[in-house]
Structure formats: C-alpha cells, structure tokens
Image 1 (cartoon, rainbow, N blue to C red):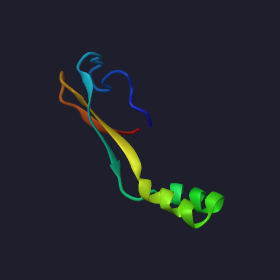
Image 2: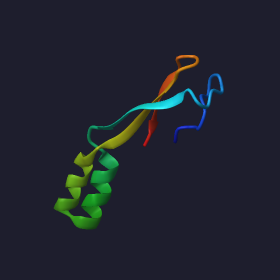
Image 3: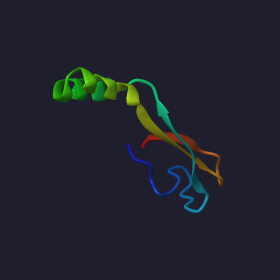
Image 4: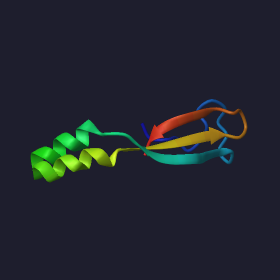
Amino acid sequence: MKAPNKCPMCGEVKGWILIDDEKKGFSAGKALVGGVLLGGIGLVAGFLGKKKNIYYCKNCGFQHEYKG
C-alpha cells in the first residue's frame, strides 16, 4: 500500500511527513523473478531488499510504514 497524502487518522496534510526511508532484508519475490529471467546473477536481486517509507503525523502522533 502506498502512503496517502494526508494522515489517515486525523486528516492532517502539512504535518504528515516522511521521517525515514530504508531498505529492509531479503526479497524472495525479486530473487525468484531475477533467477527465472537472468539465472544465478538474477538471484542477487533478492538481496537488494524492500524499500519502506515511514510517515509520521505531527498533529496526532500517528506513525506508519508503507511500501516505497
């Protein structure tokens, strides 16, 4: 699910900010697709990880992690 453009709890727009974007762990989906399309080298794509964006609302304090 992609991040909404406002806080889902209180509706704040200006205070709904991206506080962190990071890559996490192994992605089995990328490894599988890469392995099928490119063989062994494609399996390395699985180690590129998944990107996650963490948003925070300055108004109500709500915080949530979304796919990047």
